Image (cartoon, rainbow, N blue to C red; front, side, top):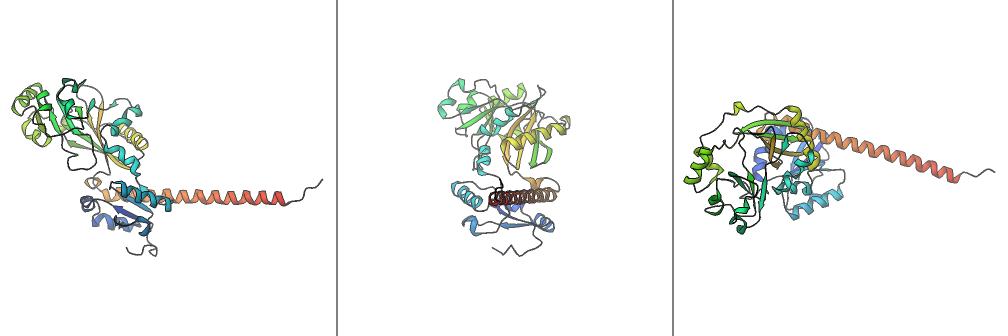
Length: 342
């Protein structure tokens, strides 16, 4: 690890612990060089060694999971209370479960905001019962319960009937069944980096008509993987028909989730229900692909500069408190040492 302390141009020393694919996509030379010009220096973390033996770091960003890594971060935080860890593993963990990740939405109490109806399927036995659908209606989306970056975390299917739930189904419980809602074939991906919010429009699953339901139900055994759907379903709506949500609405949802989740870096996926005047949040991801945004180098550099600004404000507040405490202590000492005149 290079010596960091002597570099006077370094305003913030950021250690990063990221998967190889994330490093390749996010930590590109253009970003590293641009940030360095603004005083933000990045240094790779050796996850096989204690963080306290590396650095020094003013800030740590990470997207690694596991008990040992969490203990490493915890030990670092105890020994370096002035450093900033983006973000706490306990807060990130909530997004690894597709039930708990969406729970804060109802707590926000924002008009015209909701989540799709969904149920947990804990085991294979539950799939054999018609009651497994409960208040849902076909088609439904089947998703693994865990969204922890595992090999099958993104293996999802669209299920058209009960046969699809019980025959030839490749997903294994525990999983969730989420109500599919026609939404014009468009998904809104909202990227949040602290107070920065950017909403982009992307293609999504096409709408499903009654005719398509019957066709898919008979031709594919009642279930299709997402990768198969785009080629089989032709009733797609042009995304030009779906307008962007109002900026103030997006800002309100992003701010509410940022506070409720206790996270700095995340994005949420949202669709517009064709039949109701409401938006549905369907997924939340930690540390998403910011590199897909235009000028992400500037966006993320500003994010780190604000981290530095926050640290400076905290140091100043601490310094002022220490001066006041010292002054009060001095006054108390003088009062106690002064003779009492009767």
